[in-house]
Length: 191
Length: 191
Image 1: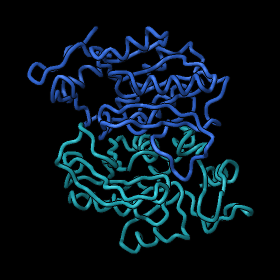
Image 2 (image 1 turned 90 degrees about the vertical axis):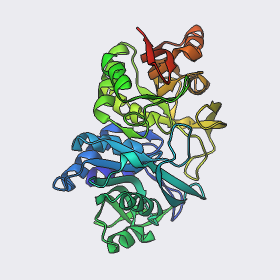
Image 3 (image 1 turned 30 degrees about the vertical axis):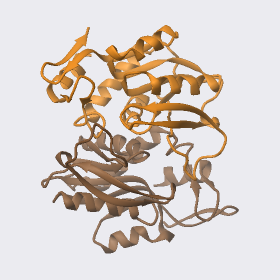
Image 4 (image 1 turned 90 degrees about the horizontal axis):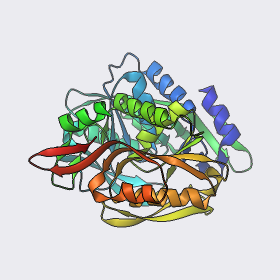
């Protein structure tokens, strides 16, 4: 998606070969106009999928999920990383190691919000080693629902998580796929 | 806001005099059509405020902020509850006790995303004792920016946080104000 790649080049910051900082428009400050275009593109890619639910994981996935869900006329469900007094015990859980936080989260979704008949589009901001996406796929499968596919904003393709998911049979559409990054040379995309 | 009050009566669950569960449409599963109407209403209430930024706190505030920001043509900034490798050290911080999680979070916003000229609308799902909103107001004031006001989806008015903020001079608009709750009798609104 050229609009997105141009924005990554303009406003993203490569801090190392691993860390791409896009918090000026994607995951701290959020450009909702850009996210609306991203949502439209996911809707175009998955228009024939019969999607009736958008699943993501807190926190930064929520913005993308909400601006995508409008284009499917579907509700969002977000997996939670910690148990609050407001969530029931009747949950599906999955273990998800977090690259940016350096820990392992048990993520959960109330069973009442994922059902056997659901056709789910999973969205997230980043796909790197695939741990989060893998966990979300496991949640959907635990519910007996169908994963229509995944909509990813930025895939660090060199980390292999996307290809592992594709090999598992999951359709993964990433709007920007990064072949390599370098603090000096910047980002190289796969097109 | 009648649409919202009706939805709370229909789908909300009073678990006690303190806990109102609205996770079927507001903070776990998210009805984006309802949130879009909520965003429109905040835009109507604050149409003359010169709002150029929407501030919220992760996680459940993000959905409301995104669907509000569209109507102001403004970006969202969300305060983070934990430090990741992607956030710089140059941050404003505030201490916020969490009622639902039973702990105290240090919330933070990168200094580059809150500036002296900003006119900020703060949005959140719940206002109870006012700790989160108070912390967000402190972040805005630390940046030398202006709090135009707060847009709250559900205010537990009997907990007093909203009135304390109003007494501090903050304009607080809550779309549903709860006078009292009871597991048997349900919710009573202030109208």
